[in-house]
Length: 468
Ligand code: UDP
Ligand code: UDP
Image 1 (tube, rainbow, N blue to C red):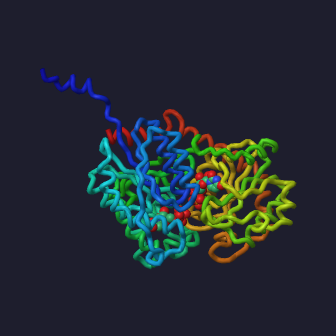
Image 2 (cartoon, rainbow, N blue to C red):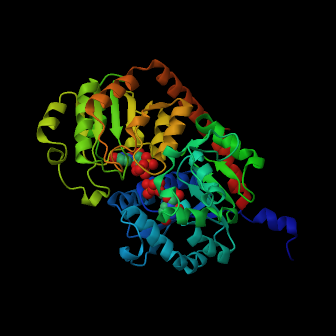
Image 3 (cartoon, protein in one colour):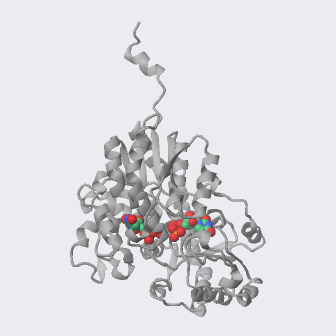
């Protein structure tokens, strides 16, 4: 006999949503995707990770391997990029060329994704890929979500770009959304200044936001209440903008830990809260003059320090030793007070060490959220892109301080901040009790958002239920 409808339902398994993830180039873009993937697996989704080949940095391929071995239940879908002739791409930044290579190869994804079994329910992709991915998801008739790997404040700027890009814009301040503190002209990412290459891309891509089903942002109320409230007040938001979902904090995961534990061992020998951790992320190479001043500044600060030095944007090109990059004499002097390394460290874990009492950061958004998660006060020193907008969040939330006169950190305007000045600000960072209290408060807020019954869990449940 034919089973009735009800027995049919009883016999069938609950539908396990199948989600594919498409990150863009660089660790700042890959890391939140892998953390998101971990969350989705915990929420019983079937996850397919689209891995682009080749990656720009070695670290990206190492992290992909670590993730895949930690989660054998995740499927890898290899996506071989078409070769890109850099002379046709109008940029010499290796990571942006990486974005462009993915964009130009994205049409190859349609047959790859449609052959997946069971069929996909949703694709989550990086904000840098919008225009290229929309035709793919439209042909597949699946849900599509953007992961925005920066702050909600930065998203206010990105999402409202069509509204102001064409006007005679950028007076002294930019009023983006009612309820949001205006953004000073000096904080606008240079790549958004009209007529630059990315301004044109941003103009084209932000226009297409209404075609997505939602925008996921690695943030939470305790860090960005102002921007999140402005977005939840639909009246103040542009027409057709999809829901903004605060899925953060996306926290450092077990699979990220490497085997090299020298920094951790060194921290174990230091007093609680005594060490300032200094790192400018995965893709910022300061000028050698500026690096030397940072070294002098650390000595002047009279604090213990753990400093991660980078000399080249892309890890495989970063071959010279500390003696060549920072100088033998200075490195020798620094040995007594701190640890200086030129290698990938487990930042997500180190920031949680009780010896770390402050963080000098370029304010890449992953770094900011990691510091917030561990309650470590930040001295913001933005270097490029969205980092001043993120530094504004750091300042407004009270998790850190920002010395605005340091500008773009000697990257774009050839300014070199002197060691004396750096040392002074580090002492201020490490000595301010109020900062520690506020950072500890934000840590609590982050834990609440992440924990059982918290907002982050609510967001994931809502998403996954929607796909069932
Ligand atoms: N990171 C790390 N070890 C390093 C350098 C960077 O773990 O030696 C991580 C850092 O914890 C963060 C990411 O790389 O998760 C960098 O992303 P962020 O958004 O902070 O800055 P970006 O590198 O994109 O400028
Ligand atoms: N962007 C874009 N399309 C591109 C390249 C860049 O829309 O092809 C924009 C986008 O807003 C993206 C940002 O530029 O988030 C990346 O710039 P960022 O300075 O954050 O670069 P990253 O350090 O992340 O490589």
